[in-house]
Image (cartoon, rainbow, N blue to C red; front, side):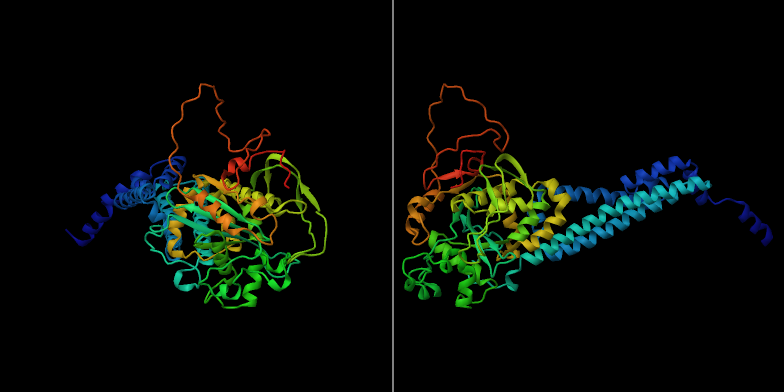
Length: 525
C-alpha cells in the first residue's frame, strides 16, 4: 500500500475519541443551561456529563469529602472551631482558602458549560448561555467575597483588641494554664469599665464600673455595680498604692467631705498621672489601678478587665439592630449638674426617653438609657446599665452575626480594650456561650445602709453580702406540692403588662429578667 493511500485512509477513518466526546453535546441550549446549573450545585457532575469522567469524578469526590469533613468538624470539634476563629494566622489561611475555592468553583462552572453546550448554537443561544454562566459566576463570587471579607474582619478584630500574652504588658493579669484556663478558677471575675471620653470632656472617666462574677462550670453570673462617687477605695497591703494611700484613695487634709477628684470614677485618670509606673509595666495603668482597688474593696480576685468606649457602644448597638428594653420612668437625654470631675456648666436635658414596655432603642437612645442620670439616682442608673448589658446579650443571634458581622467587628475595634490574651480566647468564647443560657443576677449591696453617701462606704459589710451571694448554694429541700392551681407563665422574655416588682432583700440576688421587667410604678429615685 502506497504512502498516499495510507494517509487517505487515516483521514477518512473517524477517531473513536472524538466520537465519544461529540455524543454528550448533541442537546438543546436550554438543556445545556439546566445541566450547567446542576454542575454549579453539584461540582463535578457537569464535567462527568461532558465526557471528562475522571476529572469530574475527582472534583465530585473532593467536594463531597470537604462537605463531610466540614459537617464532622462542626458537629464534633467545636473547640477546634473556636480556636480557629480567634487565631489571626489561621484566619489568614482561611481567607486564602475561601478565595481559592471560589475561583475553582467558577472554573468548574465555566468548563462544564463549554463541554455541555451544543456544537452548533445560534447567536441567541450562545448569548443566553453566556449570560446564564455569568450570573452563576456572579452568584458564586459575591458570597465568596463576603465570606473572605468577614474572615478578614474577624482577624482584624482579634488582632486589634486581643494581644498575645508575649506582645502585651499587664501588672495584674493572672498566669493560667492555656489548655485549661479555668482548672483552678471556680469563678472568673471580670471588671467591666464604661469609659466616658466624649466631646467637651477632658480626660477619661469610668462612669460605669461593674464586676461580672461568673461560675466557670455553669455560666451563672452575678453582676455587682459600684457607685461612681465612692471615696476611700482601698488597696491591698502588698500593693505599692497602699503605701501611698494607707487609708484608701482620699485626701485627709480636705476633711470628711465629698472629694470629687477622689471619686472612683476619677481614679482611672488621676492615679496614673500622679504616680506613673507605680504598678510596673502595663499597657493600661488606669485599668490595672481599678482592678487592684475594686478587688480589695469587694474581696474578689479580679482576673481581667474589659473597657468599653461609649462611642463604640453606640455603634455596636446600631450594628446588631438595636436593643429592646422596658422603660419604667422618664430617662433624660443629656443634662449636666455642673459639678464633679469632667462636668461642664449646668444644663437641663434636651429631651427624655418616655416610659413604655418593650421599647426598641437605637444606639443613640440605648446609650442615654444606660447613662442618663439628671434627676435620677445612681442605683437606678446602675440598674439600667445592667439591663442594657442583659438586652444586648439577648439581642445577638446567629442571623444577626451572619448578616451584620462586619459592622459588629468594626464597632468592636473601637468599643473594646482588654487584657484578655489571645491564647485563652477559645475558653472565653465557650464560657460566653454558657453565660448566654445561664442565670444572670444582680447583687444588691444595700445602698441605704452601706453607702448612703460616697464619703465613707462600708466595704466590709459589702464584702460579706457579696460572699453570701456568690457562695455555692445547697440544694433546696423538696416542698409539699400546692393544691392551688397556678397560671402557666408565658414563654416571652419581656413583660408587657405592668407588674409589681418583687421586694429584694439587701444582699440577695435578683434575676435580671425580673429586675428589667416593665414596672411603671418605679420612679428612678
